[in-house]
Image 1: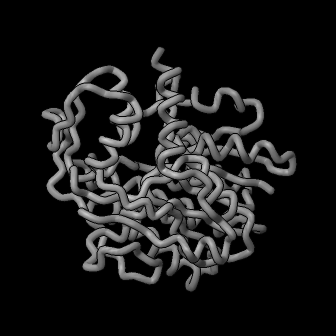
Image 2: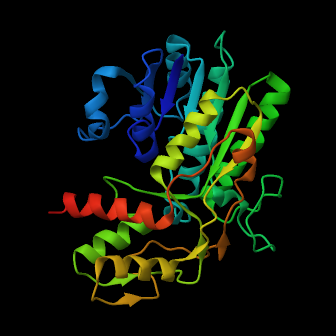
Length: 317
């Protein structure tokens, strides 16, 4: 199977690529954003001899089309894009151009591949946005995205549904909850709390009462493996643990695990990007994925945190 993976140097993409290359029947290629940063591909250095890399900007349709036409993948797993929700409020055009227009470019390029099987898109739990119901969301709910980031993701979902009916594009959508277990980026909530506490510095929780689902990276990667392997098409799936933890409680859970003695402030740090709104509740029901894909999360929140803490303790020595 020929698989083109966007975002292959990123958090989920690099971990998924390592799993995919274990199967000798797979031919894996990655679409990487052109950059002068020589460390950009360090995250997949250990599998560099097992993947082919193509460099292009998602927004460059002709470059994307040439890459897709030349590699002719059977499956595209589109994980790449702009992901930091907090930055999307100040850069809405950049996020929508990369995430929405960039995905349209990939989808239309895929339509020209003779033996194309499916287009797998990384959406997000964030697309549910503001909901009156404060219980785990199901896939059939109307989307009310609450940020430029989540609007770009929701827009892609609608476009893929249209492209399936109008052009015959086979697709699958992953709406995953917040995932942790990063090995290089400390800018997201779990990694930020852990590394800040390990450094002995005070922690800032900007939305202390916000409720979120949290999932360990291995469960997220396994979700993509299920999507790649299934014969199901033209569906959206939630992937989450229904952990429903308040951010302030998360900080105290990690504080206890680390025996942290510093302070936890319930507001954003002075240098935090401008964020006018944040959803107070985001939790998803993954029963559809469990039923149709036989996907089940293997790691509890506590176990996932222990593994993440162990990794960063070793790395920060």
